[in-house]
Image (tube, rainbow, N blue to C red; front, side):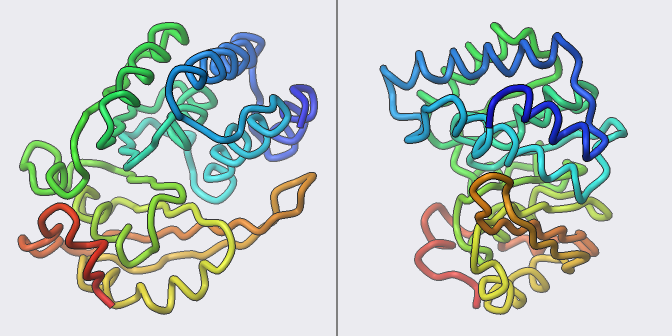
Length: 238
């Protein structure tokens, strides 16, 4: 995906990027590749692939959920900033918090925010399990996102405790999301969520399957969740 196609495909979806926003994506790409030589941020470094599989793929969340209004989004395990930084560039009115367990990624994100001149962004070095029990952050976000971090039953335990009641958890998945949804229903319900919508589509050019699950937080998460670090992965709620 070249830049013109990236811009045109988003325009088809009603997302219009300014020259400044397109320049921010260019700087993002250059910074990602430069820092990737020093630390492992992504296996995808070809420009066309980064624009398609990272930038465009991240923004697909906005095809199925309204990002036009200001709200506070928390991105769990964002790594090099996906999906939240592309969403922040496309929708500058968003406030973004990223939590990641690797401090080197947080260092990269702080540098990235500086070169992109982003405002209302917060980067926190913490395990998601500990972040979710911290009263400062627990049930305080309008929207929580995660992209390809863990299977849905695990992901729900890391993300739903952070969503305020009435807010949403948006899980971005590749293939086989329906199977994950079947095994993850118990966890979603137990943690206070309910699947509102599930969308299946294909990424342009390579035609690979993508799934976006929109889960509404209907009631408070029981205090015992999330469990201590490592437990959700070892003993998922299923």
